[in-house]
Image (tube, rainbow, N blue to C red; front, side):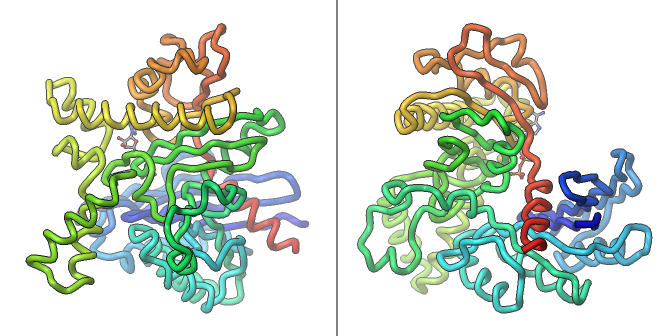
Length: 398
Ligand code: ADP
């Protein structure tokens, strides 16, 4: 294959990240990267860095809508300052029950992904919008959907099946798992020495954790939607389903329309709970650390609950894997919050997890376990864009 520029588009709930790589045989060279962040605010950021990481552009903009945000990117991509892409890779958070493989994007595929937007309500609406816009922006250039759910296709039925009747299963209710592109990127970075028994904790604004055997996913904490599993910035994580029924009945007293009641419930479950809900202060770990230092008890409880949930999950995955060789922290909190890593691991000595305080005193890539720790503990930043490029190159060569 001759060298070709691949554009990556990765949208979050309020941001669109983009990057381009020159892909040739085994080599990948970053050309540029950028983001439009803070969509829906007057103080959004639009920045671009060149291949050497120097800021080419750094603006504060009024970003009332995703359309305004994407137009900034589209204008830049058409400015002639950057090479036109030969192919485009999109992060697709959830393909639902029918789309299991990474594949070429067609209008019909976008409609299908959109039909399951209730499964990833913070991500899919903006994701499908960008897919449609990208098809118009570069006519004739192939666009590919790379799924966060793809990595989890190996989960055995005992973990993917929900304890519910078949009729709900037939409607697509099962464990899909999320953050799969991040997990794939950790495996890629560990190759060729991927440990047999591995746990990866992706701790960002959204947080999940996976048990991985020989590089294949065995189990993951997020299930039908990213609201499940461990507590996140604004999402509940796993809670008693009876809470939802109890609250739905309360909400129905003022919102008898079922869809209105469901929307009200969804707002609480995915936008107002988690670290934000427990602390009553913020969903952002940096704010919570500042609040803890100022003696805020709610912030302390929220972070304690976050650590406690993750430690319990690690324990259950050690049981599922039948032991543990390596624990990896990734995501914004996993990479940067030294205290969270220490606090999570502090009670896990019985599982062979022993963190060295000095080695843990870092941000970014490091091995943080003690020399005599039976389990290796590492911090590895994700490389999601590279995984998207790799899938695009693989699909193009088919
Ligand atoms: P997203 O899921 O939006 O991609 P990120 O992976 O960027 O999220 O992680 C965001 C989280 O990382 C926030 O809670 C933020 O506070 C936390 N974080 C980032 N830098 C630090 C830091 N230096 N110390 C503690 N937490 C941090």
